[in-house]
Image 1: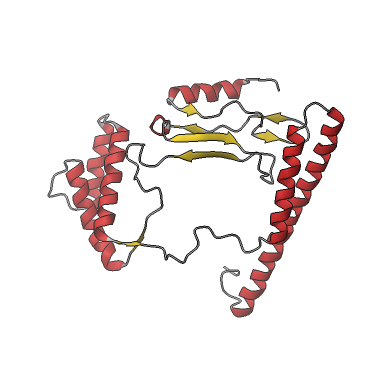
Image 2 (image 1 turned 180 degrees about the vertical axis):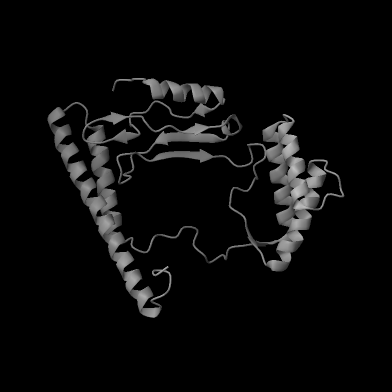
Length: 250
């Protein structure tokens, strides 16, 4: 596979360098893009310096993605990047009208303490003007963002109740249209893809397995599309039958 750099590629390289970003892509026997005509590594994983030491296990998966682009996998280690919570799970809060009013005052108080704003500033417009002046003075933007996020998190934790998921709720919910037949078809597609990619010394066998893989891949994509349409039609029939002016109409 030839490596080429055109004008847009050089512009992207200059942008990545100027912003002090890093590319995680590593050499691999797989490629990020593959179709019947060509293969390439057009997809890039770009991160900031803060997350550089937090990302591990970057790889191009041989799992079928039902697309010409491959699945890219990596792991993010919690509690390493500065300013990120140690718990990687998404926090949800319970809110109501009364708590939102309390939150506004708590949030303004946290901002005045973090950014050393005058304590007699109570209006949102005044706080906004004070923060805008800090930005125009050439302050460290990343530090300001961290302090703003800290004030926001503190105000939320002190005002709202944290919504905790039930122990019986599943950690991953599959889509309603997925079936056991689709699971079998996906596994077969993945197996044919691995056979095709690992056949290197026999061109005739490689072409044969390549044809089998792309035929199974097309069948997989068509089956998924058909199941999505069927599920959507069923949802529309049920929704309009109960309330013709509901979500479907809107």
